[in-house]
Length: 448
Ligand code: PMP
View 1 (cartoon, rainbow, N blue to C red):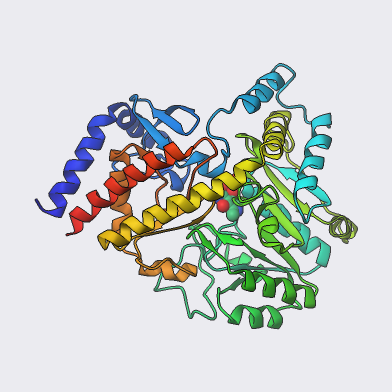
View 2 (view 1 turned 90 degrees about the vertical axis):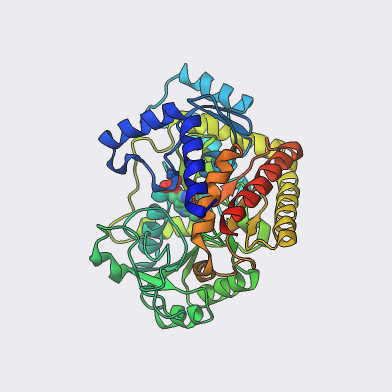
C-alpha cells in the first residue's frame, strides 16, 4: 500500500475515534480565527478536545485516554490535579478570587520565589511568560537608560511585538550564520520595533556583535535551554556571555519560563551555576493558574525606579489570590519533595537513552533531545547543536509521527518540546516508550 493510502487510512481511523472533537472543531472555526486559540495546539486531522485530566493522563470528550506529554506546555510539574494544590485553590475560592488590593499571600509567595531563585532579591508578578519578558525588557531599558535589547535567533520569549522576531528560521530569509536577519514570526509586527532589537547568532560572531553594539544595548536576553529545538546552550557559551555582558556593563537576562522550577528548584541558574541579572518565569510557578514573574537584584530595580520617567508596572490580575494560593502550594510542594528533580532527571535520561538506542538499532533517522522532564524528537540522526541544525530535519516525518502517537494514545505536542511530570512514574515512562517505538515503526513503514 502506498504512502497516501496508508496516511489517509490512519486519518480516517483518528476521525472515527474522536467524532465529538470533530464536531467541536467544525463549530470552533466559525467563532475563532483558524479555529484555534494558540498555534501550538494544532493537530491533524483536527485537535482533540479535552474533558478532564488526572496525574499523567488526559481524557478527550470522546472518552479516549492518553498519556499526556503536553502537560499544559510545561505548566504541570506533578501531573494534573495534584491534591495539595487543588485544595489550596479550592479553599481560596471561598475567600475571593480577585481583590485588586494587596493581600498577605503576595508577601509569602514573593519571599518563596526569592529564596529559590539565585539572582532574585526582588520580584515583580504578572500573568504570563509573554508579560514577564515584556516587563523584564522595560525594566532593563529603564535601569540602563539604553534603547536596545539583544536576543538570539531561535529563542522564543513570548508573542509580544519586541519578542517574536527570528524565532522560527527559514532558509530563504535567515541571512548568514554570523549575522542573522531580523525576520518577523507573525504578520502585523511593527517595523518601528526593529530599531529597538538586535538579533544574535549562536555563533562566535555573537560576542563581537555585542561589543560593537554595547553603547546602545541595555542587555542580552537568552533562553539558556532553547525551547524551540530543546537544545541546551553550551555552558562555555553562557559563561562567555556572562563575562562579556559584565565587561560592558550590560544586563544578562535568562528567560526561565520553561526551565524555572522544572530543571531544578533554582532553574537553569542553579543547574549551571551561571547567575544572570534578570530572570523571567511563568508556567510551573502558578500551580496551573496563569502567572508570570520577573526576578532581579534590589540594585537593578532601584535603578529602574530612579529612571527619568519613573518605572511603572501594573495588571488587574497580577498577583491575584487564586494564582498565589495554587502557585504557593506548588512551590511548597517542590521544596518539600525536592527529590522529584533528581527522579525526573533520571527518568529523562532513561527515556532519551532508550528512544535513541531503539531508533539507532533500527536505522531510523530520528533522535530525541532534552534535559530532565523536557524532550523533543527530531527527524535527524544526529542531535541538533544549534537552532539552525533543525533546518536539516525531514519535517514531514515529525508531522506524520504525531498521527502515530495519537494512534498509540500518546498526546505529544505538535512541533514543540514535550514534557513529563513527577506523576509519570517509570512504569508510565515505559508505556510511553512502548507507544513511541510502535509510532516510530508505524511512521517509518510509510517511508520505506
Ligand atoms: N518564554 C519562554 C522561554 C517560553 O517558552 C514561553 C512560552 N512557551 C514564553 C516566554 C511565553 O509564555 P506564555 O505562553 O505564558 O506567554
